[in-house]
Image 1 (cartoon, rainbow, N blue to C red):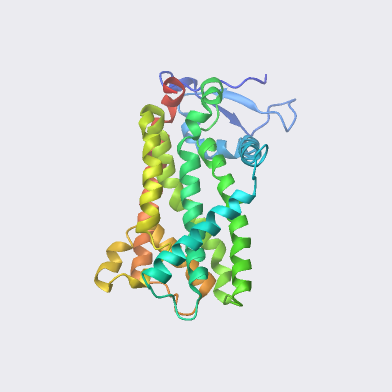
Image 2: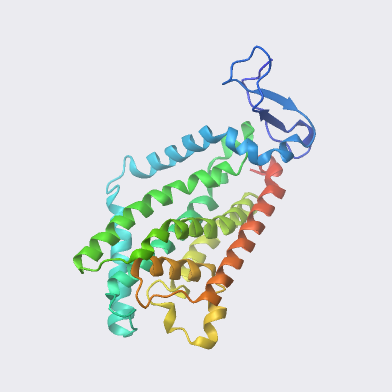
Length: 304
């Protein structure tokens, strides 16, 4: 017997947490799924359950993309204007006024935009995911599905903006007749690293935001503050050697340095000790975010 209606998630009755198994019962079509109620089953098979709900992930992601770009005045143009205008401001402030050096023969606007790529990806995922659970309150309070799908799907919009920004970067490179080196083949690795670096804090904050709604005011401050303490408008090589390792404890530093190494090459070499420190911080924040999210997930339907 199949059930077409999902069950609500409940923190007070964990034994009723459902799991849709991939094993079809006799006489059922392959596309149909059997709902089994068993204590602890959903927790044991949580990550497999995420795969079963991949269609919901795609639907939510497409909905967020449609909302972002449909019925807007400037639409996709905003994805071009924001990084381009920020690049101009940073080039004037850090390059012309502060006279900070670039990396070798790399034009300063290219240096800035190569640092803005991972920063905008990080900050956009953090901003979009932080309020995603509250924004989908009606869905979460009525049906069961792994709640991790909601903040993960909201981050897809940031990837679309990131793709647009990559096109802008290559146009700027072509304007300055700058050709990237062979290290560009490693760019997908650092894109994944940027996503992971943003997911940890995003999961932590979005789970806290369900119970403490004033956390939504923290995100704009974190994004604004992080933009200036991260090496977006300048190269991290200007940081004194004695401070560079500790500066790299900011996980975005390793991601930005990795992007510049992939895109610019030349003197944009990775500071290996600092990069390894950034990786450790990224892994720790991701573990902490997932752990806290999973720990509080069963209470979302009651609190939201």
